[in-house]
Length: 151
Image (tube, rainbow, N blue to C red; front, top):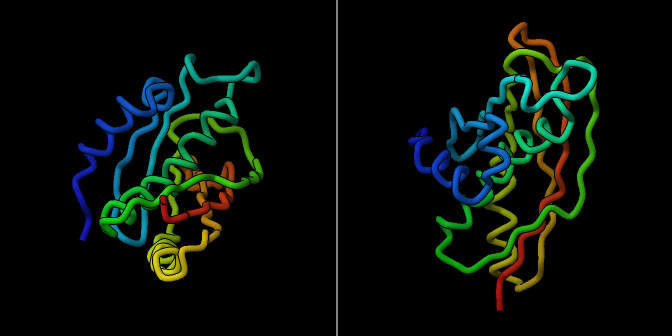
């Protein structure tokens, strides 16, 4: 079942203010999927009149990371999370409203269960795809997330 995005956007304001000021907003989250939008504006543009790649990266990472945070919270355990690495592919100028969708939420629960059971860190890769209002892919980001039980 989908959850209210308000608490996550308030979290964004206080914990990720640069993302919030750039316009990164969570539109949907459930156990399997998160949708984040960001609009190209003067504030987040590059010299080529499109969205700066780092702003796209913030929105893409938020679409993956917010599900990790949610699943860790549900576990009731103290678990650390960190992006170990990432890569991106840019296929079109990002202008207008860009929507990043991650549908890899199913990977998180298994990794958390394994780290709790073994005490060893786990790594998993989540993909976030950004599309413009015409449905054209502008960028694809892959994030290698690590989770580990805190001692």
